[in-house]
Length: 276
Image 1 (cartoon, rainbow, N blue to C red):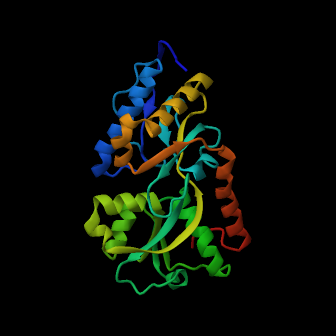
Image 2 (spheres, rainbow, N blue to C red):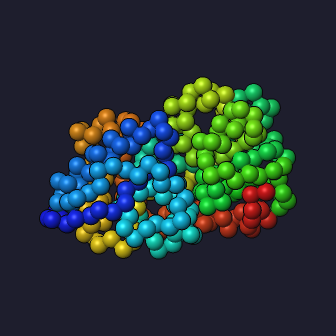
């Protein structure tokens, strides 16, 4: 498919896995995707990513060309604002196909051996709108909380990497982060990463998808999908994929993300509606 002469000056960002040390890897991915979009006739595309965009922005702006957004808020605060294009497949522990999971992280030397040992701990999480940081651990803890508050304290920090650092330095007893976030953190900050360990793994859910604005024309959405699949499978971009631990980018059925809302309901049914 081609889009001869179509101009798009919209917003582009990759905020989900965006450690400062990863800027060159993310920039290389955008460069590859931009090249594939240009081959398909898209003109005047932004040259650089917005590296300052927050993982949980106020909204998915109507002029968003492409970004990566957690699947849980796509169904809540961002409902009808974005169209899912495709899902990444990562070469990281606890990923299976286009699925990932949350990992409970504790200090390497902590006494905790199992999930029930977290009772009364100081827990840090990134956002109340996060799937891996709040929704998935809520579902896991619901199974052991017996319908009562379980954690000693809960602090919302707006940063999963920051929470791993808090655990490594003893400022928090535990956190739960996306397993891909943890893999990148351990790759780029091995000294801090080696001070932590995985205590438990949450149930799986679909990986964090690539999306565009729901108001984008259908032919543009299809062009974006084609470009993503080309970056995922062309030998030309093998090094780009390696930089982000990408095995593939695949089509995904948007209703598959509803399992995240099912986990939310299951936690409520178990008497644990809030991470507490």
